[in-house]
Length: 339
Image 1 (cartoon, rainbow, N blue to C red):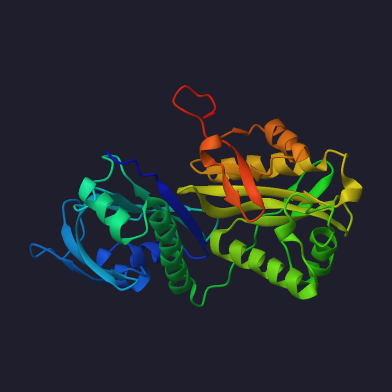
Image 2: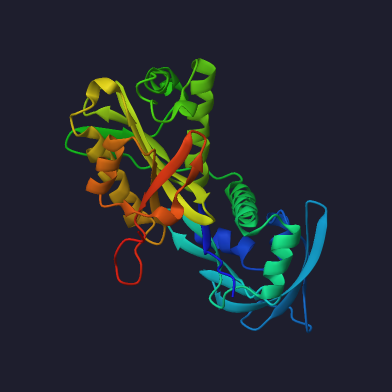
């Protein structure tokens, strides 16, 4: 039976859970959110959503169209909607969790507790570019789905603050557009991006575009990259945080820490990385944390291992600058590394 990975992504919505649930709980609203679903029809005369209710989705993407038959398998009012797709055996779910006053985190998952049917696997390989490419497409579609939900739920609601992190020596705070000049000083230094030259910034427009992407990521997910400052100082000495992405078909939180060369050797990298890692594991306990490190970057390898990440060669892949070695929080059934 072909292997298929769990896909998971999430979004932080600045709205009470009751408001979010009202928009999310009915599969008939999927066409409003999903970039694939064109229409949804309940079967067997059903009018209310409950476990056992069946429905049909008409889907389309990239010139292809197909129909899926689904059944609600979990329905916890105010908390979770999950349905199984007959054709491929996959289970899709939306789960709500309170995340501070007036905020709700929505987690979307695609699971395969029974594996995937040979029929669906064959169609994926023949018509949809193969499993890894299709997983990436699905992951992007999940993000679009949650973005549309977020925009609908937050209409007219004022957003609340983003967390700041503190250590004995450092302050990690939310990036702002005016930080672009200092970010350029860091990522525009060839020494800083020696192992990842594709990240080199050539000027203020590049830096502003990068920082604005960070800000949008924070607004969407409720996590992202922090600017790192020495305590009680205004100068930014680096940036550190996590980014939502897929690697080798696995949904992960990609961890990065980058510092000015003049503060290297002070232990700031380990201090910031450990702080972000602890925060991410506390707030997103079911997500895999991953650091992708170039083979010759021994300093980053030491920081990753010191923070408790372990080699995970299954997730190695070629990046823009060549092979990236993976270090992650994943463990196998015996509790040891996947190496």
